[in-house]
Amino acid sequence: MGKVYIVGAGPGDPDLLTVKAWRLIQQADVVVYDRLVSPEVLELIRPGAERIYAGKHEGEQSQAQERILKLLLEYGRRPKRVVRLKGGDPMVFGRGAEEWAFLAAHGIETEIVPGVSSAVAVPALAGIPLTFRGVAASFAVATGHCREGQLTDWTRYAAVDTLVILMGVENRASIAAQLMAAGRPPATPAAFIENGSTPRERIVTATLRDVAEGRVEVQPPAVFVVGEVVSIRQQLAPGAGLESVSGTKLPGSSGLRVALTEIERRGFMSVEYSPADVVPRRLKAWPNRR
Ligand SMILES: C[S@@+](CC[C@H](N)C(=O)[O-])C[C@H]1O[C@@H](n2cnc3c(N)ncnc32)[C@H](O)[C@@H]1O
Image 1 (cartoon, rainbow, N blue to C red):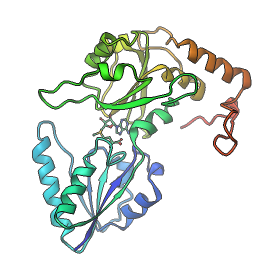
Image 2 (cartoon, rainbow, N blue to C red; image 1 turned 60 degrees about the vertical axis):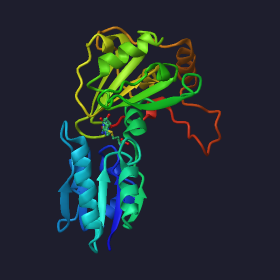
Image 3 (tube, rainbow, N blue to C red; image 1 turned 90 degrees about the vertical axis):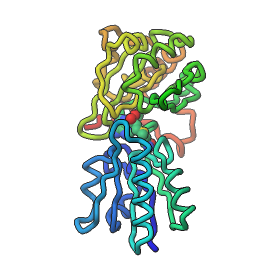
């Protein structure tokens, strides 16, 4: 019998793999990978290893998943080290738990290797913290893609400070309209980060109203972030404008204005945490990625 490792590949940049994922990818006999695993990560697979693409095409979700489970079972029964490689973290909208449960039910030794989820890392790399003292004390991660015949009740999410929507590109206008209908102000800042952490990364900022009115051009995969924290990007990513796609300046709440004024006054990020938690860094010295 072999062993199957269900491994998170992170958002794309190989430097964001965990040390364990990096080691396993290079040691694997077989790598079964998803569509969202970046070419840069796939380059790490050792030349003699078998690579199997298990991406799904539109409309073949359930058959594809059955096919993948059968494949994992077949390889897991051989004396091989199998890496089941998934974008981000396997347990965040990744069906990692389903595959683990299936393999366990068939007596295949399985280990999970968590990955850096795009939900948190992609906004962070774009200079958008999901929480920020005085501005956002909660966040939720939701899927923007519903099963046929099912509708997401966006009123449940409207009150969350920061909302992160994965798989939300296609339904973006309707999601934004429903959040507004549920009480989120039309001027709420929003951002889409396409292909985060890869050389193909692209960031678009907008207001919720712009998104609802179809003014945002964006391609999947993208993380859709809604909330005041989007405006903090201006402080963390030097050179980043805070314009919405419609050309207006993104507004911020009074909480955000107080927090940003405080940063400007002090010249560095929070100093109230212990030095072990946060090393204050001068804004001028803030590293500009890429
Ligand atoms: C099926 S979900 C898988 C999420 C993954 N398990 C994770 O933890 O990141 C796929 C969605 O994740 C988001 N996503 C994953 N990688 C991304 C990236 N590098 N840049 C932007 N969005 C990404 C997109 O919203 C995409 O539609």
